[in-house]
Image (tube, rainbow, N blue to C red):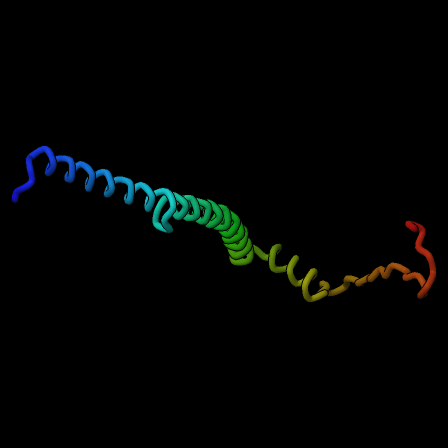
Length: 109
């Protein structure tokens, strides 16, 4: 007993509709669907902003390296600030702020 052409057509349409519904459900709710795409887009935006920050830092470091390679002023400045070095004949003065005794109130209070 063979199926009539109308019945076969109906079954084909029904199967195709079921397939379309299944694919739509997977598209809108699956991990590889729209939620996954949104999650990846947010991750990409976060990574791009982090890359911009790191690029600026790298540019600043490259400028520091160029300064240190090209002139004495940058080397001298670093030696004074980081190592506390002075030139011959210079006098180094260190100013220390007074500290309040323990339990005393500060003027800001």
